[in-house]
Image (tube, rainbow, N blue to C red; front, side):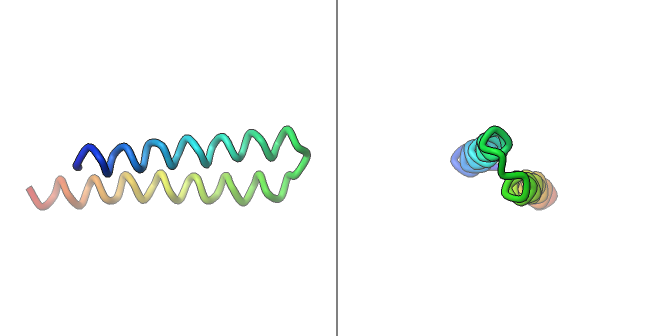
Length: 57
């Protein structure tokens, strides 16, 4: 995986997890659950992209 793509997934995952913590502290449980699900999907997509690129080489 290229470093720029890995950096994108790393920063995106951290931002989404920070959103989860903010929504928990703000008392918005539905937004926290939605952000958590989105974070898991985003991080999982990063692992899938890494696996596909590793399989090509």
